[in-house]
Image (cartoon, rainbow, N blue to C red):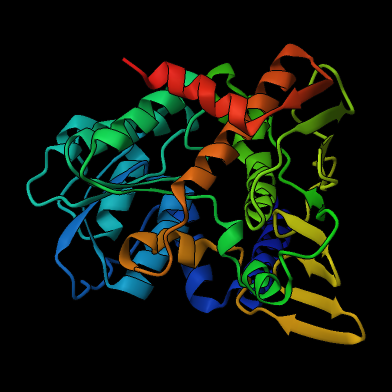
Length: 384
């Protein structure tokens, strides 16, 4: 690389850091940058709480998002960590002031004094790690997706029912300030269906990215599940419909989980359209535009940084800085009495995500979905 190329690369990186500061604020940006560098990281100051949290998975999300909000908002302290990638585990342990990472997930779960485990590992391991931690009597926070197959979801749900610990999920959009503001202004008993439209400019993924491994649940579990989960959350405000008709369109049959459109229609008139495009990537990595309508309430959410909300002749404008996609309240669910999400809602969200994952894998373009039938199928797997 020439000196000119070095200079251009540095300017690009500095511009990106400055853009992130304008979106996320300096503290969160520092964590994002530190998580990318993974070397020369100063140890974080100890919080006021006992060190009683385990971290399974030490990648960028665990470092820059979970780690940031735990330390900034709760004073929580990490007692142990593990990752199948030694460099990720070692750098995370160093940043958290730990002597060393654990050599295995079993070693982490056996740590004395552990009370809570965050699972932020590869997607196919979420349900297994979560169920193991629940069986040990621990509280568990599982990042999305909570499972990538129906048997995994059944095993996790069975462990939850038998456990004395609590289970939380990392689907975060329902916790965003914009969605909570919309909820305060919408009349859930209004006549007519709910409408939701999402256009997502997403990350470009390399052909060898781990999201693309057959066992990891496709981009439906890895990305699109966020907006499917948001739709289920909105439906739950009035109770679930009996039936959803699902239509799936992809730009390239050889890559059916990327550059795709999903349409859903309920038997009571609810409509949802989700388009994921990764033909090119925004400078910040991802951008979302979400339009919502129910009754007299209409909302336009611009990347969870701004929202315009119309109610008849009344127009409200909201600005959210730092950008708030709901990570803070989702991650802090174990520490807040008012924050935990109804697990039955998460379960139905996961079932819808798994249905569309199956459609992508099997090349199915149209399907009917029933929450009641899918729950019954799940129950049959859980039953001894």
